[in-house]
Length: 121
Image 1 (cartoon, rainbow, N blue to C red):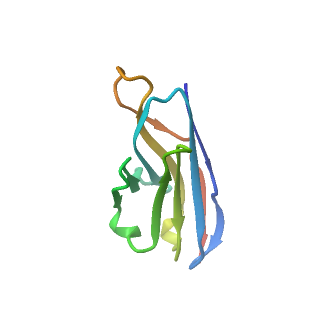
Image 2: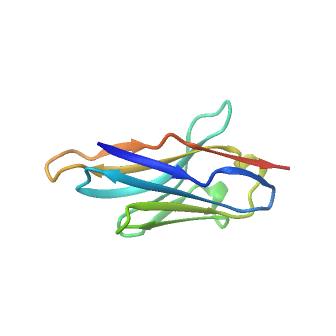
């Protein structure tokens, strides 16, 4: 069984910073990509940033230059440093990972339960 535990959400003023972290545990053979998605009220879930096992990154245009994703392969963790936060960044942020539980299994997506980030103006 695979578990994703997120931490670091909260309330911050516009222009402030927050750091989200996600720890992946359980029966894991190989983790491929890790990333963060978000869902604002009344909107669909959208990609924020992803990072591959080789540390290649991809960012949504709306967060480029403000957010930085990183991962620790030894600890199976992924973090998102969010700077210069804006009210429009307010959303529930979800950790995502794509991994295999055994050498012969398929790659499967797993999701965390989400952590709320609220940016006040």
